[in-house]
Length: 410
Image (tube, rainbow, N blue to C red):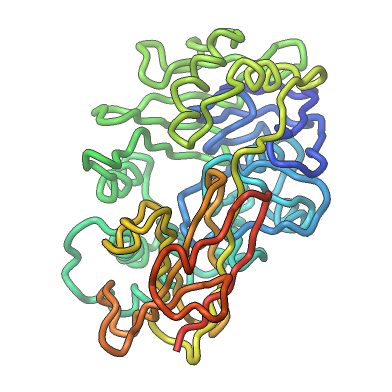
C-alpha cells in the first residue's frame, strides 16, 4: 500500500472505548493482507520502519481511554512519528484492542536506533539494540536470550522460534559489518517457514537511509525493489496498492484502491481471525472513516488468566476448554504457554466467542509439555466447593467484553 500524508483516520470501533483519531503527517509504504490502514509493517517517508511478528505471551495495555487495533498501531506510528524514540515515548497513549493478533513490534530508523516493543502482562517492555544486532522471532526477548545461552554452541536442528533466533544471532554476532541486501535475504531464507500450516508469504529488507525497500514474495528467486523515497505521498495522490504476487512489482505498479478491492482483501482474510461480518462497513470505514457504520462486536470477549505459582521456574501451560469432551481428552484449540520467570504472570485469549468455558493450567517444571506426577492440572472454578474435574463444576459464562480469572499452581 502507498499511503499519502494528510489522511484523516479513525480506529475501527469494534471493541468499545473511544477509537483513536489522527491525521497522517508522513506518507508511508506498507505491506498488508487486510488493506488500507491495517499494515503488517512498512516504512514512512522519513525512514522510520516497523515490522511485527506473532508473540503468544502478549497481553496488551487497557488503561488509556483511547483505543486502537494492533495493526492500526503500526499505521499510527508511521503516520505520526519520525524516530524510534518518538514511538517509545508514546507507548502509554492507547489501549490496544486486537482484531486477531498477539504480536510484538520491531522498530528502526535511519540514525541506527532500533528497539523491540513487547506488551507483556499488560505493560510495555522495550529492548533497545545498542551493542548488537536486534533479533526477534516468536518468543519474548527474555525467553529467546535464555534459550540462546543454551543453544549457542549446539547443532541447530528444526525451525522452532528459539532455533530460528539462535540461527540469526549466531550469524549476526560474528559479523563486523551488517550484511548486504543479498546477505540479508540469505539470513531470512534460513529462517523462513515452509510447512503446510505456516508458510512465509514474503520477506523484506529495508535500506533506511536511501529508503529502498527490497521485497521477495513467497518462494520467488529474486527480490523486487521499490524506491520509497520517490513515491508521491502528497494528500491529493490518494491511497494506492499493488499485488505482491503480481508481475509489475515496483514503483510503477501502484493503482488506486477501490472499495471493491478493499472489500475483497477483507473477505479473504478477516474470516481467518473469526470476523465474518461487516466486511462492507469495514471496507468503507478504512477508505473514509468520517461516516463509519461499523458496529461494536457483541458476540465475543477477552479472557485473561492470572497464573500464580508457588515458585518461579519452568513454564505454565494453559488451556481453555469448551466442553466435557475437550476437558476429558485434554485437547483444546485455545492453548498458551508462559515463562514463569516470576510467580505472577498473565495470559490473554482474545476474541473468544461468547459461551461457556473452563480453563486449566499446570506448572511444567521439567519442560516436557505434559503434566507429570508432581505437576497436577489445576483449574479455575466459580464454585469454591467443587472438587472434581467435571466441566459442569468448572464452567463459567464468557459474555462480557473482558473477564479475568485466576489459577494457583503448587
